[in-house]
Length: 182
Image: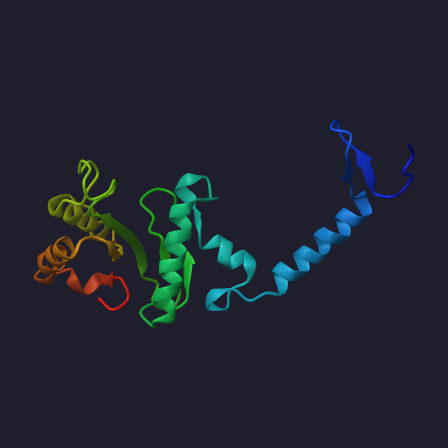
């Protein structure tokens, strides 16, 4: 059976399959590119700027889930007025996540989890106040301010961290990122 230019091809199953010629693919790619480039992304960003905020220089500039989470936190803090327009810090080693383009301040994000494997499982990798403070203080020593993501901490762990930092000389270099309403 000859289908000519019908756009149908026969696969190994014997059923017709849709094929698209190169001209159609190029037109569809151009249409998709136009849609992506004309859309405005959070914070008034272009598509490229939005993607670049999630790139991690320490991981070959790849966009990984952690980078997307950090980008979303940074953009939310911009929206709240706690940060000015941010860009990704291009520094690979000992770099922060973002640079505030108005103040020039570098911001690193530290996220902590009370129960990484559920409430009934072992606490391997779970939040420990002394380790959390050490990570924060290391970033401060590197010259960065710190955004502390407490959304996955229990109320008790979050309160102990907040209390421990209240009296520190670097407490003014912290932005707390809690669950909405906390």
